[in-house]
Length: 164
Ligand SMILES: [Zn+2]
Image (cartoon, rainbow, N blue to C red):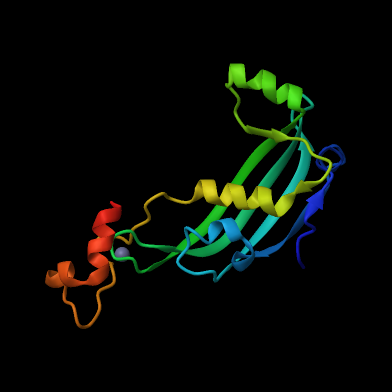
């Protein structure tokens, strides 16, 4: 099942609707810059609800895996994605007022009639990824030709150092 791309966010939240499905990593174009490859699938659920103050919200759950690039050896690094987060739906006027207080437990987004679910979920995944992912110490990949002591001669080793 593929995701319906848009929901009427306020209506969805007020009626307690829920959708779930799968997204291909390959379809998440903004993620492609930070991933080593485009393999993988993310399962998601979006549950609409109202919080105790009656503010419409969306509870987002995601699980799956993606492949990051280790910043030490530039090898591929399987990274499990599991996140659950809540976003509150606000009008533009409410959002403007919020910027002054900025003391909310959850992020707020603009309540849209055509909210792009995939875009929202992709944003949450991006925010959850580590900035400089690395293998566990000692688990970095070395090629057969270069033993660990000759890392400096590996063309990518120099690049890796520039990035850190
Ligand atoms: Zn590594």
